[in-house]
Length: 56
Image 1 (cartoon, rainbow, N blue to C red):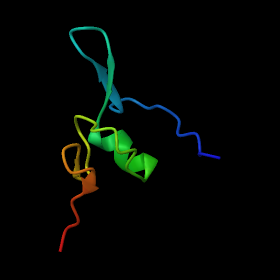
Image 2: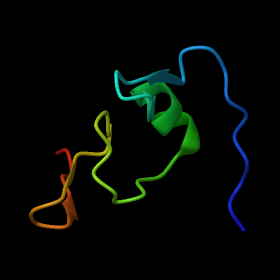
Image 3: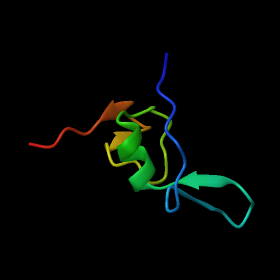
């Protein structure tokens, strides 16, 4: 079961279309990559290769 992370100020913003877009701040708090190609993914997921870019 996934841990519920409370939403705080700075965790998301609304796009011009009205969608909630999570920020890097929230994605880091969540602690894992969902592999959905998030706009602000701090894990470096590439939707073309379906891989997370690992840093050296």
